[in-house]
Length: 503
Image (cartoon, rainbow, N blue to C red):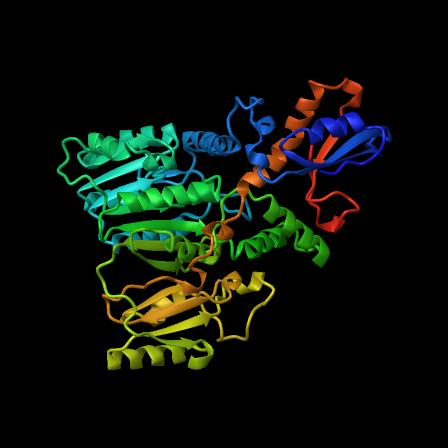
């Protein structure tokens, strides 16, 4: 622990006695009125999110930061779903879907494309007994449940569950709903609770598909994500599918931040843009997952799984198709794995879609399997350091789907240059399983591939909580007028890299 000498020893000693604090520096600085005021800069300790003094009630008796973050999302969605301005129809309630660039609702036609693509992906797994985690306003439920033997939907928001209960209509005989957080599925008694919910519905009551779509952003940590995915795998019957959809990609998080900041201030200089992007990334309170996470996580599973990691396949040039992706996990797959796929690079096929089509045609004629990786994604590259390529050398997932129509080809995410959202095409027998997306990450800690929204959350709340702590132990005149959370103290390293959050 570090402390600076001076007249603020009591402040520094009080703060350094806390588990949440690693280093402190107190200085005197002029406020906006020119008055001299003490200001404390604090570096939080690793694990500060678990420190008792940063729990809402203090002294180890309060709510953990993780629980607070989940509760915060619950409050957001209770409010969001109570509004009806974005309800187009009972089965098309678009509440909460707003454009990050404008703050306005995402266009209806773009949302309908997003829904249709997601429904097609889930239906491709052949679900008969579907458990959806985070069913929201039923955008998927109303379109999937009719084709199932039963559907169970969980949501954190009681308002959402009530909304769907009132509108089940002809689906009421097979749809059951439960207000609960995502990690509820990991409880030992959850299968029994699910069976009780489904009383009167013909069994079996074990799901063959677990759907978690546009929900992981609200998870508080990598550990929470892993716990939920592990629980889903345990619940599924052999051959069942875990569909994790509409995830934000950690690999393209910086590209997304760049795109948002460019729209916010097109005239910002390079240094100012870089600073704003860094602040946005550092302060991100949503869980953002690198596609490589799934290879690392799959290697930890006791049951064999195959994984298909896919870009969003919509044609709209929007943030959903640029910076989000899907993963389909098959538990104990019965299909054959890689049938000796011949792997090619984008350069091997002439850096063109026509060259790709020729390679696919040849593979089909020979009854062989071929894969082409490293296909530049025109939706993402303009926002990366790589920049756009010459016309004709880039494409999109939607264009690849169109050009390869009629062939047994699938568009996936490429493991190369993840930060640019590169694409891959795999063509082979219809029964071919797309196995692990990137075997190179097997054995790695899955947590490496997920950001830490709890840190951003705690950095925002820490100044207020620390001032409250000091106010209860020191004279009012000794309590700093401002507390800033920084990544490192001035004079101990790169001050430019020290992002500050204060109160």
